[in-house]
Length: 164
Image (cartoon, rainbow, N blue to C red; front, side, top):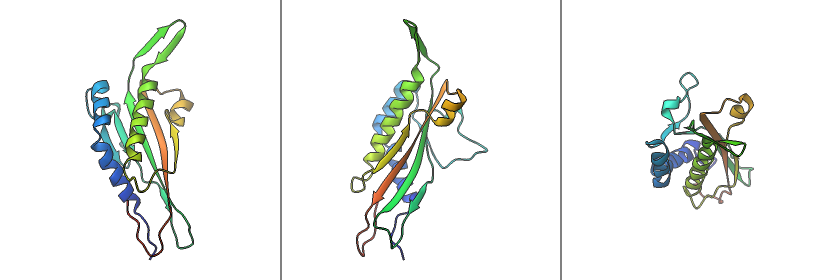
């Protein structure tokens, strides 16, 4: 038997942490008048709609474990989206407020995930305040979608189990 972690165990821990986050709840209530919807996994036939925003989507990721590994690696993608049609224009500069809101919500999500398991800190994050797909299509306003891939690198103890 190879000791390791279930990806769903990590996901469940993050889901609960995000659901219970007063900071995220307060941010979403102040900006959008409701708590964020949280999705675990996605259905391409029924993706989250604008009415579901703000939302947080935790996807199954990947892991690398094995007896020949000095370090076990786990990666879990997280996405989020908000809808904000507001824009300001002054002195020849037009800004879409949703860009700032999307980045702020993403940072709050990352901060909460980072505190989910102090014994297993985040090792690496690839963070996109706006997803590459949205940027490539130019179609990101008024819905702004961010994404991150969060990685954990854990050194297994000889003969011991792993907990998250």
